[in-house]
Length: 302
Image (cartoon, rainbow, N blue to C red; front, side):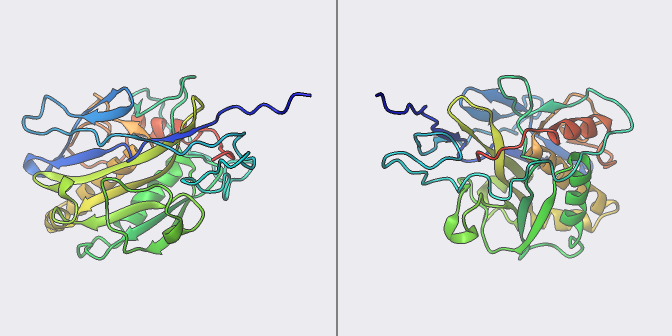
């Protein structure tokens, strides 16, 4: 009698995360580099902004595991670079995205699956986050919390504040850090930092952010963690200006939009436009895109 067959379900994830940079431009506006998706990685840049460019940070393979996701590994193959599957995953979404009052198609997704659905976070588990606020400027106490509340309402994703962290930002952050955060995906890291600590913030760059997506073989992708770095000295300077808090909030919301899975658009009314003019917050297109991302599939296998 033949033995059981096992499909190779090798886990794959981008390493490090997809990345975006916000650039501070003239008249206190934030100018954000555009994007182009290339093969196995991401490379960013916008020829409209002279001297502003980005390069991809690359990707890396996950550790292979034979057998079905969510089942014990067979033979001696084990899952070494991913947490146990389905941690905190429920049968139904924990929340529901708020349907926008105005319909709009002025949004784009950073990545989509083969069936055309956007890559997002599982709505059936909370998205934990930690904040390294050691260098947070005066007046920034509620900026992150308020922006996360706004994104949570728009997507239905339930965020959980795991409190402060001393984890420093890294251009090659590991998505599973068992010794630091236990047997789960690392929480979203939000760090107030400086160009000395995070070289990617040098020059006009005011913030970076993105998420890591994970998949088994050719299966659907989902984001599992991410990080967001904010240039504390630049934002401190903004906070001392009129409307500085609104601009800082717009920067954080824009970056969280990328973290959740939104790409830039050509509509200047939207917050995901590559330049922040008036800091009016999320517009109809942004909200409709976040609404769709909030309906991503649940993933008990991750």
